Image 1 (cartoon, helix red, strand yellow):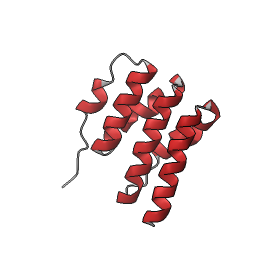
Image 2 (spheres, helix red, strand yellow):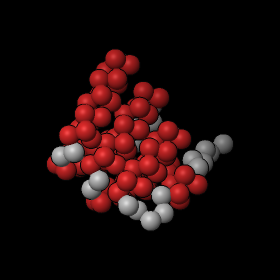
Image 3 (cartoon, helix red, strand yellow):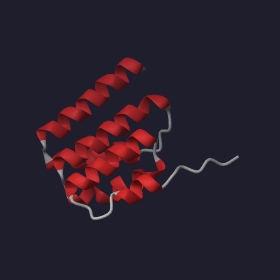
Image 4 (tube, helix red, strand yellow):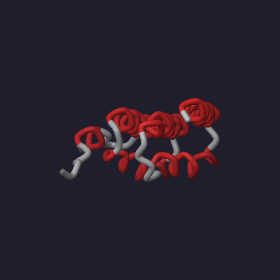
Length: 101
């Protein structure tokens, strides 16, 4: 499974480098997916980074929703929001995932 995850993350990074806005819906779907396995974290982080490179403002709600993701995804989402020009990317970093006991 790890090899597949690395391949998927590399493909997501390539989409960001291409900068094609047609990739935004698929990248948003990856970022907000409910899969909460360790091997998906790299893909979510890559999706946030790719969305920042593309710079489409329609991704802002999904990037802001990344506040409930892992720290790496949160950091990538914050950087993406800065690139897009969102006024307060810091609020993404201040939200922490709350685990139920």
